[in-house]
Image 1 (cartoon, rainbow, N blue to C red):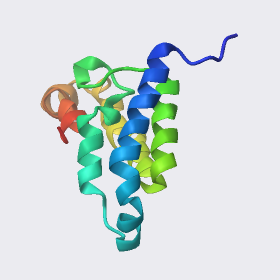
Image 2: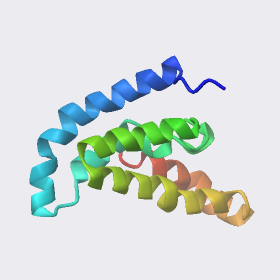
Image 3: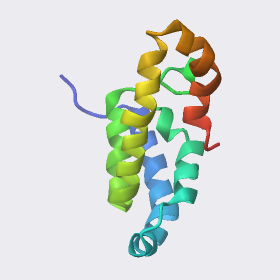
Length: 125
């Protein structure tokens, strides 16, 4: 079994690392001391598509593998653990509950998910 990251995974790591170096690390200490929710960083992470990594394209995601999500969390945590946790919670819990129910409840699917689910991942765009 080969555990070497693919070129796509390496490129993704570099992309997230650049975001962290330029947009997270310079502001992390100040935001942490103030105890403020990082609205601008949260919006930026959404614009970069980080909340939709685990979901299919028809719901606004990119349907990447689990390793890509782990790379995202690892790089975000390197810059600021709070942002990594917020992103993980949004991706693993907040949006996942709705995504999970969309497939099981046709009424929810047509009334909410098809209209709102995409916005869960791209709302911050």
